[in-house]
Length: 305
Length: 109
Image (spheres, rainbow over the protein chains, first blue to last red):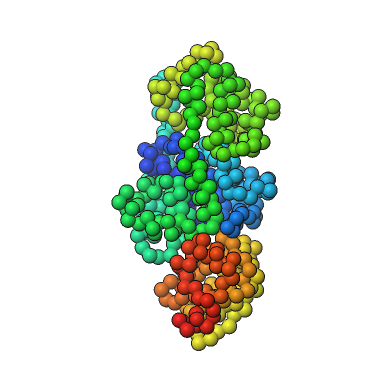
């Protein structure tokens, strides 16, 4: 039976539901989302795995924008088989993917879009639930399988694995329940090999403390220096060792990098991402504008005015 | 992958050899599901000659165990060390009854 929602959609829905309709900016979420994409591809027989490698099975499109973008990335570089590499590559594009996932949830009439004005020129986008049927269904399904001794479905294994290794169990369970059913949750989380391989990588990413570009930006720097800081943070955050594994828009010396730099000069800050399909740069709109960030942005605007 | 099916005292015994991976997991699933649809509730998978199993293969066993549920069983026996390791790593040894050899599995059936 075809599922109404993909795994990334179910995960984003759980997070948005818990976050008052706002796409979370949590550092864990980018890697959890990336892992959920790989897991969905595995469920849909595009990827397989054993204890060591991720195995490419089929690049037949799934007709889901996010899954197919990921599939194209993975099949265009068949030499890289480690799930951790693909988690980092997909996580780099997580903001772009989140847009598509949220849009898909809106099209499926699970979420709606609300644009709120903050101050006089910043806006914040919210995605309130249209109805809570789907989110309740996901939570109920996951809870029932954990509280019972039944053999879980593959889809439930994957969701529980992501919640467990992504430290997101509190979206579905109370602290008391997490403690009480810890052993059962751990057993379910390990049941799928690709889930296990992905989740091990996920655990490494999640445990990393990221540096903050914003802090570094408090001192006024040139656009190029700011962009270099962003690159360094991305490399640390997504465990990218080689510059060639950076997203194309951040590889120095390329025409695309120059476009990125132009965008940084134009907007004055580096809270940006590039949507490859639309060939457009975006400033992260959905962030809460804290006083500190606001001041940094004002500094940036005045510096380049 | 090759599968040889025999029946003994209403127990269906599947001797599986070779590899089970994404290339043949669907075929493997179809064979086992067909047996269940034809009324089989007691199964033994003899894995003496199974050399390799991937995530896709494990999922078939999971699906079959779910389909049989409490109405019957699927026992596994004679796992090679490399296959046994995969079952242990994935925690499938907690879901399935695994026996040293076919005789032990039959005696518990």
